[in-house]
Amino acid sequence: MVVEGIRQTEYTLTGLKFDMKYMNFRVKACNKAVAGEFSEPVTLETPAFMFRLDASTSHQNLRVDELSVEWDAMGGKVQDIKAREKDGKGRTASPVNSPARGTPSPKRISSGRGGRDRFTAESYTVLGDTLIDGGEHYWEVHYEPDSKAFGVGVAYRSLGRFEQLGKTAASWCLHINHWLQVSFTAKHANKAKVLDAPVPDRLGVHCDFHQGLLSFYNARTKQLLHTFKAKFTQPLLPAFTVWCGSFQVTTGLQVPSSVRCLQKRGSATSSSNTSLT
Image (tube, rainbow, N blue to C red):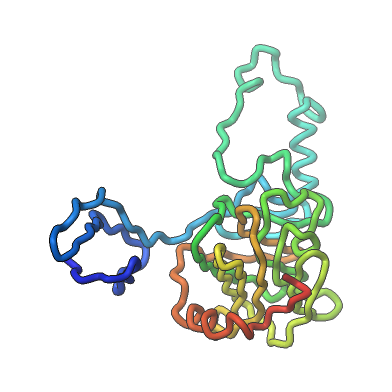
């Protein structure tokens, strides 16, 4: 396809499909007298944002399987038993020349943190394994309604292993608590805003990194629940927390058209609270 007569320095292509690669885009400048040389071809992509949950970051009480997490009250104790067995306690020691000793197991390299930074204490958290450093991305999370506490959001990789999601300046989240009484809040830097909306069982997360917008939606009705406005100074990681419950994540999703419309229409009048920026 040839597009002629472009008089501006920008041109918008429409009709491109989601999660596709388009080859051999090139441009050249023309005036009434002469045309210049074509530029080098460039590739335009519309990639899907896909990630998995990084089990090496997760709290020991969380059982992580690719894109699902289940609370396991015995998880930490089981790990402690395994650690003691590895140290030769509670079992017969292996011979010194056993091939099982000193053989490192392969580890998947991710853009998250290493196992030594695994969340612990009351930070029942797990991070995604893919950094967000630009563009717009959307994913959805379905959590079981009987979960006692659940949180979803984003965090800098520097989030401390003892720190809880939304209680530091390095994380932003929506938090749902079904313990004793129901609460539905947006949290950042240890400040909370109570949300006046029905608590959905499926949440949509829309992150526009360059615009500094993090929005949460009822994934079924696309009702806007809350928008954080921030200046992200570091790449982000999807972040989740759960206590006495479970959840599943869906990635590789196109930003819904209704979400794009709501963002444009409500950029100045969204439900964002300036105290939570």
